[in-house]
Length: 556
Ligand SMILES: [Zn+2]
Ligand SMILES: [Zn+2]
Image (cartoon, rainbow, N blue to C red):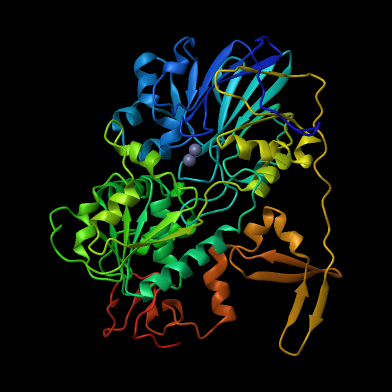
């Protein structure tokens, strides 16, 4: 262990005074224990999330003045209903979208809903402001501002966060938070210091893997947790150009269908919880259930559980759903697609809190006719990777960085990065060991790392111009949004050529300009006022999305 190695803090000598924030780690998410952190800020007590199995570790804790609930994932809210029972008068703050996605409707009704980006007074000298975190619709970061001796102290808690936009959630608005200078940043580090391909590359890789299994006439099962991943997959299959219009049935089991319905309800009530292109998409068709659109997404019902299912098909299932619902209905070959680092047992407890936890993969394999199953893993992360996390930290420029929510090894890998060690005070709290964070009034935050420039080469031929830049340019988290659509725009600014990554929302218009013969409704002579005027078309008379198409396509 080198001299600079950061070891987890054992802050047993926690001091609470006006110049100190004390963090009480009841659950830090190193494994499956869930997230719950207590904070004392001056004389105020706040609880951040409560995803513990029960409240044992909070037994001797005094009542908090307020609870912040970051998002609807299980490991953040599992025991909030117990918190509500124990301290019925303590407000639990969350976004309206988080309330809408909760299965526990009693808890949802009891939440105190806060607007986005508007500081709300919790006490005379303490405010709470919610910032979009990316990651899941409604997911929020909390910014606490505490005023003492004419100085503002800021504490920023990320919950789970993601800088990149996904199919159903816009990413964390990094630019708006740049230079926030919080005194304390409590940040998740679930993917550690590892670097992953950007989200679009992960999606394309998954689509390619899936395509090859379907081409072999296999049935493919995707076990997913209740919220987030399953809906992202459906939207990906609905909107990826390799799948739109393809005759394929995607079966969704009743548990996942329930959370899809919660998404649809949220989309109807609060369209702004979703990216603009999803709102537009939903104006023409249901984002999940629409019998007239391929690929066809259907509910896997228990009533029809004896009917055979035909390959190729895709199944989106929760690992607590009995495998008999789908397994024996297809006699041919099966494949299972699991996300890397998936924890099926943890997902089972989401539904089956007191029921048996079993090896889903074994029970699935044993229930198939052939008894053999091909297993594939894929990446589709909705958390910042190592580069994203450090990028976020450098942009916020905090004084103290508290790393939670991830395996201890992964958090340590982050804490040992030289670029972080040299600039910030890093802490990895351990459960049950309060951590004192001193707020020095003379604090000036360190400068962010120097903005790098990249040198490359250009070459031009009659057809095109190519630029070669060193691959290190992709290590910046901003690369992900720059390269997200794979299309860039260049324009002159004086003697300089400025490059800009094209946003997914601008894509249709630009793709048309680049490929005027593209087969898509908005390129078709029968597409008028966003509806189809070709009587031969199955889309005739209907409002259709501009990027849809049918066999009757005729270029303008
Ligand atoms: Zn989450
Ligand atoms: Zn989480």
